[in-house]
Image (cartoon, rainbow, N blue to C red):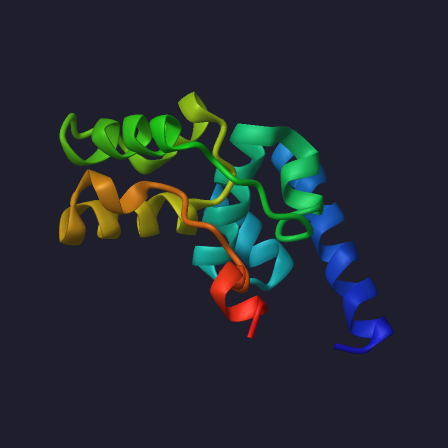
Length: 131
């Protein structure tokens, strides 16, 4: 992505924040900014959770949630029928895609699949390093 397109993108996000602060609906937001309804919905949910920072800095850093938070959020949605938006707000999860991914994982593989796994290369064992 070149510098100019990123700047335009930032400008669109800034305008989205202004509109969300004015309490416009997501359909109006999508029309006004020329973005998809899905993007407008995602920004509106992120704004409800984390305010302007959640919209302006979306995707700029990766937050890691502990197992207990993931499990509680998933159970609220899957087992208690709470809406995605309500769960996002309650547990301060600005990313709809993260919550939905956790729900898919939970349905497919169970609660144990939500445990955070170590990332990166596996450490070498002492037997390998001495050879």
